[in-house]
Image 1 (cartoon, rainbow, N blue to C red):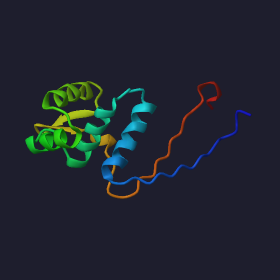
Image 2 (image 1 turned 90 degrees about the vertical axis):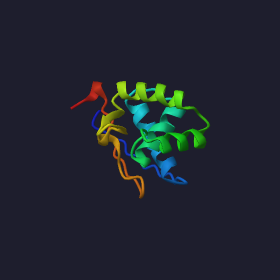
Image 3 (image 1 turned 90 degrees about the horizontal axis):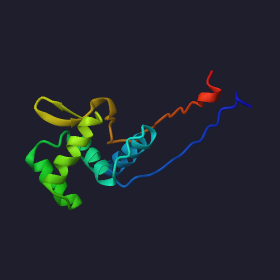
Length: 120
């Protein structure tokens, strides 16, 4: 039975780019054991779409949209930098480019989970 591969096709429609990004980063968090909070997922999603979370207008808009404070953003940025989700580039805090797909269109993911006991 170890040679069997299970395929599942999932399809989810999202209301906008922010929701699509939120779902994507939620999956990355779960698969990589990051244990990101809902607010942290919102911040990463927002920053990936806006390009950064360093600009004052981006921070202010995030605070208004999600009902939070600049101090909370600073705490989350610190944690997310330690986890390499955020990096500093060109004087700005951005989402690590290795995990930023294009959220303007559809996103197709292939996830392979290997069973260590059955690994080939």
